[in-house]
Image 1 (spheres, rainbow, N blue to C red):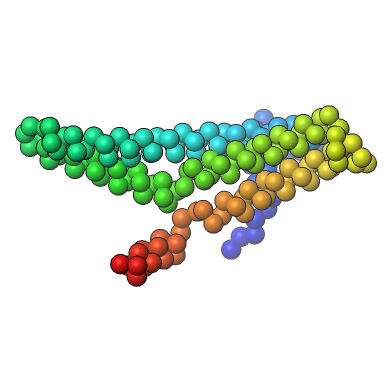
Image 2 (cartoon, one colour):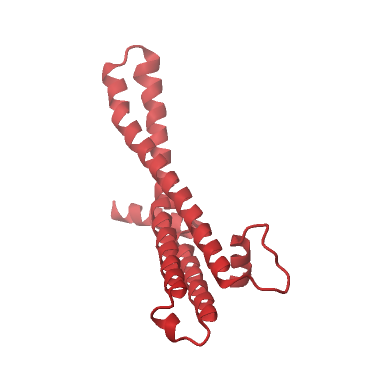
Length: 173
């Protein structure tokens, strides 16, 4: 297994127009880029979560209406079957991909980094007494980013989790 490199991960979050020569980026720019990266991931997962939630709810609520009020083979059988399949897919997607948990993780990380940036900018608390507040900022926001990565890892679906949950359901029955 390849060892995770925090520097590689952070550099991937920086925009393409950032120079990557021997000069290190300004700590505020570095931090703002991390904030933007977490913000865009949070927005993506929020939108994904809301889309599949509403697809699941809408399909579950409208399928019975087509069954009871529909006339003809298409409205009575095909449409409810397609809606049920969409509901099953969206529910499974929400359970396996967990976009609502990722949304919370990324938004929390974004807020923690913003909090550290504000404390750094106004030189309050630990940043006021630090001999090197820039290094303290980089250290703290890098730790937040790494902690987010380690919190994200268990949420990634893998074959063992999927097989384990289906075995557990079978044993509970």
